Length: 150
Image 1: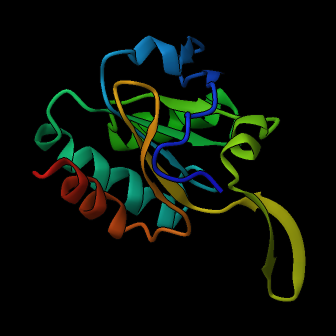
Image 2 (image 1 turned 60 degrees about the vertical axis):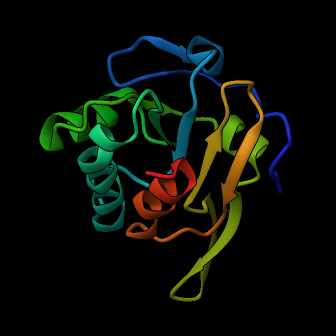
């Protein structure tokens, strides 16, 4: 698991518009990266919309969502809820694995691999400032605002 002070793993993924987005493209800015299991599901919608709703309170901090969904699903999610920030398609879950959020999950007795909802505040220097594993959708914007002192 990543901890404060760790270097953030590299990110280079396609967003909902088919544009490649890298973590390096945000150099000099803080970035809130949140991992969510599946676009347009209730918890993920709650989390994504809550972050959209506080975007005006986070200053220059960028917000970036990542899930295993394909870019088309990410675009549909963004269009429906007018999220307004990059949603990255980690279809091979390589970035999720690098962040330690691709985990064995259980649902109704069935085991499968999937995203453990988590969020990371990455500093302008590319180092992890805060790591929130197993974060709830409603706590994500609260923790971000607390970390930013907003």
